Length: 362
Image 1 (tube, rainbow, N blue to C red):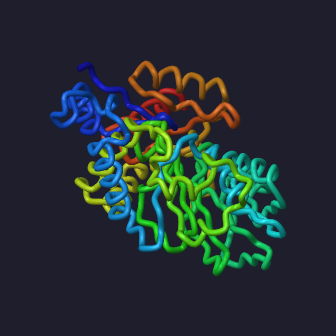
Image 2 (cartoon, rainbow, N blue to C red; image 1 turned 120 degrees about the vertical axis):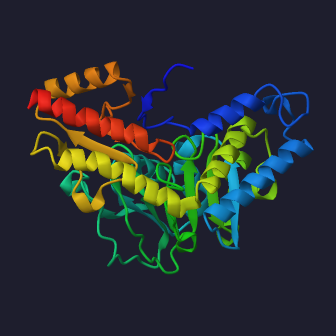
Image 3 (cartoon, rainbow, N blue to C red; image 1 turned 90 degrees about the vertical axis):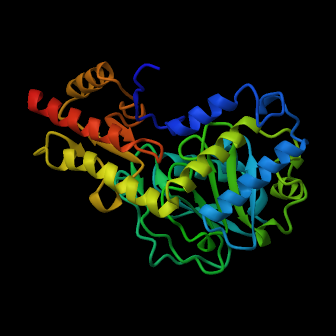
């Protein structure tokens, strides 16, 4: 195999090499059954075992308490933007959202299609360079839930703590930082995440929901868009994304084998510190986009003095084996996505490249 790229793609994103190698070994024949995991029935005993084991691993790694259900759905977080208000926004209630950037904005716009929606807090006035303070947030009795985006992939901001919302269910879109650190799941009524950043390849969406939220779902919601449908059928109502669940299973084993979420958090801190240090010690050559207390450990956003210099940086980085450092088209600039599977060596190589590029262009 030729040298692997330094993969900083925002999603689909890097997968652990050990996981890819294990999947390669089992691609043609899965555990001696004479065929690939992609060929078996989702009603087979082999897949039912895989489905159950993957749920158990998630509950163990994420310390999911009793009283929660785990679902493997399809359609990405974008479908969840609609399913949440469809199922949880009842007549006479208001859906509350924290507006923190591009992905929160998409969720808010979708919710408005289904009922009363309010922005409970926002950092728009600071151009989404920080997360809003939620410590004194007051929600009325009409609040159906409070929704927040734990990590904004495009802007590069991340919540460091989560609010106590009392009897109002807290819903977290954790698509880009799930399993990157320990989280008190009991604070949330629901957590969801597309897999393609920290959990595996695209194709499966994880939903963790407190059981009481499954009660009294509106009768008019289509069968496939009801959470209770998938809970009652253990995520097997229709043909699931078998291979994506299989890959998630391998990633979860990889996380467990590497020390769990506390170890992931420390690993992520150490490797992203390398890049943030290259930014902060550059005497203004590189400028971090996000205010320091709100910087993401998953998506590092930064700028150079001119767009021409940024284009030169991207071009040279690609020539040196780096992939995915161009910022999102909606905001420009540069972005390094440093999810769990991005190795320390890649971050060290990027920091070294940044220092070298600065020395030649300052």
